[in-house]
Amino acid sequence: MGERAVRWAPPALVLVLLGWIAARAARPISDPDDWWHLRLGNDLISQHSLSTPAHWSGYATVDWVPTEPLPEIAAAYVDRWLGLPGLAVLYAAAGMVVVLTVHLTCRRFAAPLPSALATVLTVLAASASLTSRPQLISFALFPIVVSAWLRTEQDHRTRWWLVPLVWLWSLCHGFWFLGAGYGVLFVVGFALSRAMSRPVLLRQAAVAIASFAVVALNPVGLGVLEAPLAVNSTAPYIEEWARTDLTSPAALGALVMLVGTAGLWVATRHGATWPRVLVLVSAVFWTWYAARTVAVAGLVVAPLFAAALDRLVRAGTEGPAEATATHRPGRTETASLAAAAVVAVIAVAVLAPSTSDRPGDVPTGLDATLDRLPPGTRVFNAYALGGWIAWRHPDLEQYIDGLITPYSERHAHDYAIAAATAPGWYRVVESSGAQVALLGEDSALAARLRDRGWVAGGTDAGYVLLVQPGDRAPA
Image 1 (cartoon, rainbow, N blue to C red):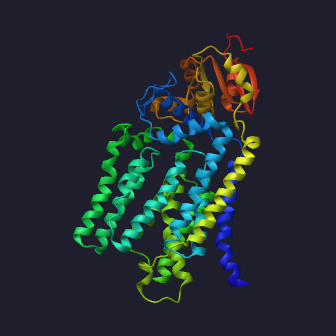
Image 2 (cartoon, rainbow, N blue to C red):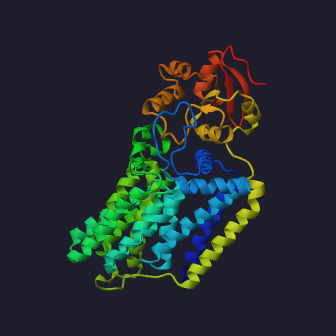
Image 3 (spheres, helix red, strand yellow):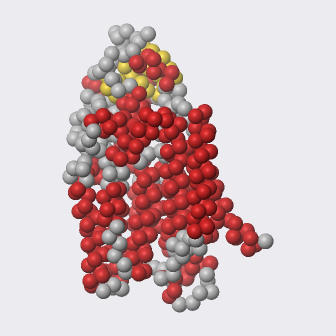
């Protein structure tokens, strides 16, 4: 009975994760950033080019480059053809790919049960970020890249295919530079370990350097090389870039793997090679650095944790075999999990027309009122609604949105002052020239504007539309 439970536990755990992804996908689209991604995808389609579209708000003044054009264009086409239910199915499919990729790459270094446990903890670490956004592509590619370099440590083969992979990644999400950076990290580890001959090490270094250099061929332009750093100026004003709460479920998932990996290395006295130690240290940094990068920590440490746990399970094995031991998922195992993922996506496709046919967490009840506002009307909006305004009401000019890159640091700072009703908050609102405000109904800013005589023009979904004194409220 015990052996049977051990045999069935790994696929059962993975199936639970696939079901969880399906349940998340079969709900209204509600990630605030989804809407500006759709708007940007439509703009890129309309201009027949991957170059930077025109600013969609008069408040945006900073030059920027689109870093996720391919998934944005794909999502925009899915929305055109299948509507929001189609986007729910796309989200489900992408989420399934992430789960399966994590599990199957862990299986290259561990047996089914350690791999399944590592996959569960990785999904927990990434849970706050597993939303319907292009970053899911990065979450699927991180395990592939880290696994490839770990296998390079074992067999010393040169995996040139990583170079075009990073180039394609640079068209999909800004985390490409971390994927390329891990190549450099591994090469440093190879050099410190002195396990490779000089010619082999030089070839690995060439792969790592070429992974960065090839991004210069991105059709978006050379600006894509600087784009990952552009977020630094406005990151303090974005919640997901805040320092990690180490007591959050996501952080705890990552910490279990980090501490577990280090502890198992010490206990078994195997596995702590230079490249792996550097990866573990990097994961510690990502766990601490920001809520957004906790997912990265989980994704890169997962195969290390699975391998270390596998060594513990195989405690009877003697010698340094663990450092070079490899596993490979069987065709039946892979096909069964893929089939389960397909069934889950089909289930979402059946449910989505009734569960995901309208936006979630946005004031759709105010659409008619907002549609009657004159084109070019400036709206002082809640941060979470900026992307939705850009997509659903493109003729209006939102004060800020989740793309944020086109807005200056000063502009983001001013918004933070107004949202917190800190000293000088009304000067910010007045200088914006906004005739209306669309804010959380119970927010401090909405209450202070009411005190200043702003009049409610409607409420919905926890938001209120306020009209400046002296302006006629929309009918």
